[in-house]
Image (cartoon, rainbow, N blue to C red; front, side):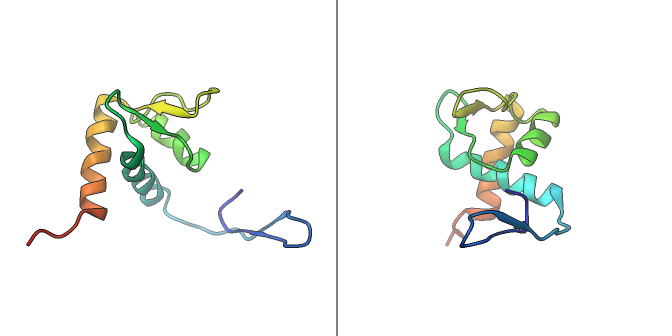
Amino acid sequence: MPVGCMVEPRTGKCQSREMDYDHDKVDEMVLALLYLTLDRDGRAWKSHDWDAMGRLHERGMIGDPVNKNKSLQLTAEGEKRCEELFRRHFGAAES
């Protein structure tokens, strides 16, 4: 569903509400959240916005997300960056 999509309860159809947003910030959050499902082999579940996944692929952070697999391969750079971003945005403050 597009950003700003509001689902009509009776029909289940999307009523689009166009919204401008910072794609870079969204991509950073998506990359950080991939850390939650990252396994030892550098694979993570790809259940995020397809446009963001495409941009991350173009930036060399992840392998091509367009396939039948439910997971995707992070590049070495993407794997390192996703951990850094996750720790920065979601890590507990150290005492």
